Image 1 (cartoon, rainbow, N blue to C red):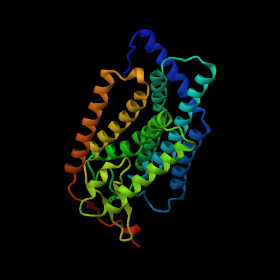
Image 2: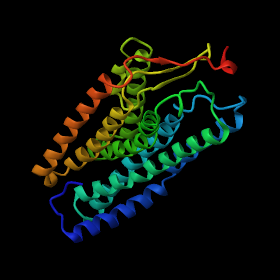
Image 3: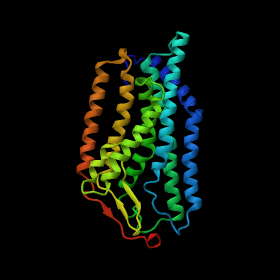
Length: 297
């Protein structure tokens, strides 16, 4: 958090404000609904699985990204707007605008935690029930690649959804702004990733916030793992999260200090470096697995 006031009292106030905003987010019906839907879909996948072992676990965290991440986006945008409406109505300010923004940003650790629990549940299911030996998973991929993909597409995507909601609440004031941003994020991620994922330059998809890494099992029983460096992309995704929080704080003119400018510039530079590394290192081409016998046809 970049702020001009770094006194102990200010830090204590920010922690208290973050606690309040976290509880507000935890009680939000929209956020609760997103979490319930994410884990409900996962439970259905487990219950309805008719195969001897599990397949297609690597892309499963996108379920959390969609339901928890997008519900968090809408919920945090509403929290930001409702807080400012209350400040205008009452005429008193609990901290500066930058501090209020930072408090809601810190509350986004809640959807991050929900996404992390989701990913750990997926890993536990895979270890308990087993996965197909041809599956792109632990054992057929380096552990760091698997964890990078799981974290980037799960908890970090959930964190990003919440922080994008904070950014939306600060800068976009027209009715339905959060819903428009949700649609835009989904469309950009889909249109910027799916059409080129199977092509010769699938690494170019990595500029989108939620790129595809796994094709799912195809009719011939094979799976494709798309090109690129998952660890570098994880760094890029974290930079997008940091940028959303910092630009939201930038809305407060009194917070536009040299420190904040440097922080935003540093995040942009590191993010671009991670993006370039993600596209130019790691797997140079899409990897195709051996066929999974019981998934052929």
